Length: 280
Image (cartoon, rainbow, N blue to C red; front, top):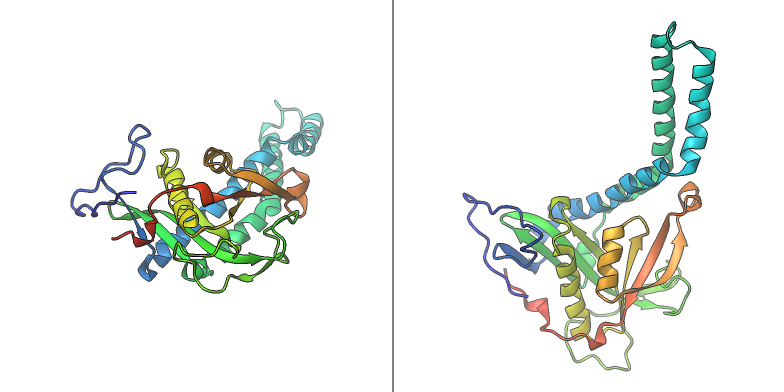
């Protein structure tokens, strides 16, 4: 993937359109450096926080939501004459709606907690490979990958904490790894700023990591994705990934059908220049 220098701050480029896709003449993909930490981690955290918004929408559309809300509203309308007690009806109706929405927020709070935990993580510093996408002078995308040892690659959930033994010893940054030495990689982050989504940038970042995994002779690249994230799931499928496991989220979120999906691909047959030498 070609890269170009960043344009001057005095003339920031316009947002890319779907027709231009990426890489554009203003896009730079380079190695992550410590000075990128704040912007990159914030971007990943925002991606996780968006899952909460998607979960809220899922709940608002679920029949259970209306089986709670509508009977409560029916009691209000049955008890009060709207013409004579309009103010009371509006007040009670608003209170019920706010209370039910607050309950929905409590159900999806664990997803927001995950986003908060992300901001305290050092996954980018510990990654074997981490790249950022710069558009103009703004960091708009990040992806990272880490090699790990798996106790059982065919496990029902390969990325279960009990199955990930430890980070693989030594960073795999050459093409000379013996085929007898199994390598498994986890996509530890993959995020694009919201207003730059749906133009192919997420796919480009994923392709960049796939080139690395291919050149390093990785036996598999695994990534976890929420069943709520239709765009990410579509991109993974278009890149050749397939679902190897589905785990319902704990508690009420799982009962609502929200799952964590593990997607996998064997990138060995992919070809392309190893982008580890991407220059800023």
